[in-house]
Image (cartoon, rainbow over the protein chains, first blue to last red):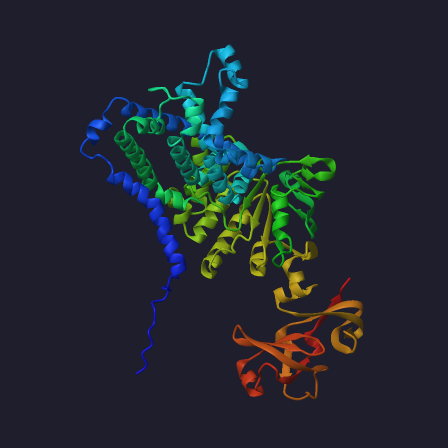
Length: 269
Length: 357
């Protein structure tokens, strides 16, 4: 009898050279989060959560991130459409410019915002003179800082979805008498809706965690500009346990969002 | 009807696409169905897209119903949404997020009808193609044949002056195709405007169209009604399409010289540049040189044998390449196999010879 050992089809040995670094990489990503859970002062959690300032910061964070996301969707989706569908000179340059805030250190972004939208900034001084509108130390400033940093995530995700979508549907709409706006509204938008949702989630998550640009541009003013990341940073200097609790809240919010939209995100074109 | 005169299409389509150049002239009268037939890559779809306005012309013009839609020389250009042209796309392109009804209502709504009126018109069209009960279905829940009918209704619901169909039956399986073809024929006959159909399937073209325009390499190689084209093919592609062996040569009374040293005897009297065509069934195969009546006989080598209906189609090379249809019994008797040497023979009376120019 000849005994030939067969592996199940599709199962092949994983080389140790790849397995070890992969496992280390995973540990590196997960351990800090586990550490956060281990060091959480569970007993005093309820009272720390309800301490003055915490809920205010959380509410402010959620509000600002949501408004920033809406702002990004309203401006970013048309921008993504322009990049994906209209062949204009300098398109590559525009696309590169859109991605700059992605690689720019957020603090630098904050400084740049201050130079333009600050009280003495190019646009800021005009807004102040004309309408009495100022951004620094206001929630509007937080929204602006978050939108600046988060918008590229949305634009890139939506542009990718638009490029992946079958443009022949748009051609079909044109032959049926639909102009570009009608086609965008009634055909393109519904077709790339999952991509927009994915982009908005990414954008929202990035806005929620924004720290550098916010503290530089909008300052750290309780109730108005002190978002959760700023509160964490501040707590770190006074009470580590508070910082841990606040971090846990942020972590929970992020994980919940990620899990609830995971399928969408993966299925996005 | 005087509407007919003004809804004709006259077009000279020139589209440069890298190394490829489409250059064809087409005219379609109102009520007429013309099929653009050709192999893949011949430029049929480009022609259709140019007519619909999805590809701009680089030269020539498109006149529809007395109105110029596209003429680059005169700087005239009408975008697709303002052309009175309906299109049925190859894989239908029904909007996946809309129901069958809303897909059809899309056109009327874009033309300014309110939601209610557009839906009413869509419902009427849905009923006309026999799908009234599928109004609320999304395209992914329609069968291929149903989707084809919804696509047709969607294109017709805007009451276009001209209808374009791109391979309308190509996406269907053989059985659905048969039914849908008959159905489509009925609707095309009812359409008052001009209809241009693009296909690579000769059967679709023969059944659906009044006139065939055959395109190869971006040029028209032959046009006419089905009877003329099937009787007198002018290119290898057309000959294959209609199942004939086709040769071009120099005729002198009853002799046609093909290649240098090969001459066929034909029944027709011809002179000069001519085509000779004969069906594969007219070719007889013999193990040795046949004696007696056939005037045309030549030694040949078998390169392939395929089933063809109830018979076998034998591919031959020799002084001329040819296809022969023989019965399986004859094949067994002759011990036919690829590589075998045989004699092929064709009676002069089975050939047709006609001028090439």
